[in-house]
Image (cartoon, rainbow, N blue to C red):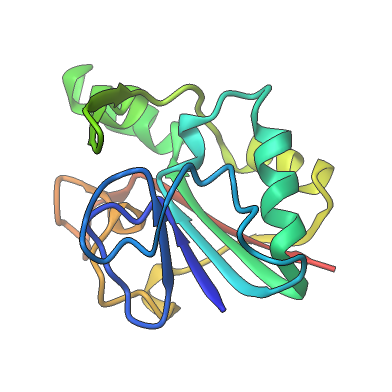
Length: 182
C-alpha cells in the first residue's frame, strides 16, 4: 500500500489518499496525523508533499511516530517541505519578501464541514529535517529527485520553482527528502 498524505486536489493512481479536504478521490477524510485505520507495518511508501510543515516542532515527533508505525520495515517516507535556504536565496536575488511569503506561511483554506484555515508552523533545511527524521527512528536520510519518482507526472509542490514553473533553470524551493524505516 502507498499513502498520499495531504493530497489535496492531486490524485496519484495507485495511492490511498488521506486529507482533511473534501474531494471525490479522498479515500480517508482525516488528519494525516491520525493513521489509526491502517495496521502496523502495512505501508510501503508514504508520500507527503508540503504537509509536514503544518505541524510545529513539538507535534512533529508524534506525527512521525504514527507514520513510522504504519510503514513496513524497509518502507520509505518521502517528504517535501519548503526549503528555507532556497527561499532565502530567492529573497536575496529579488529583495522582495512577497516572493517567499506563500511558502513560508502557507495559508490554506480547507473546505469540509465548514471552512477552516491552516498555516505553516515551521521551516526546515536539510540538516534540521534530517535530525527530526533520525530522532524519530528513520535511517538513510537523503534528498530525492522528483524526476525519478512514481509521482513525477503529477505536478505538486515537490516541483516548486522560482520563477514559477522554471523547472529547467529556476531555483527549486522544495526540500525533497526521503528516509527509510529499518
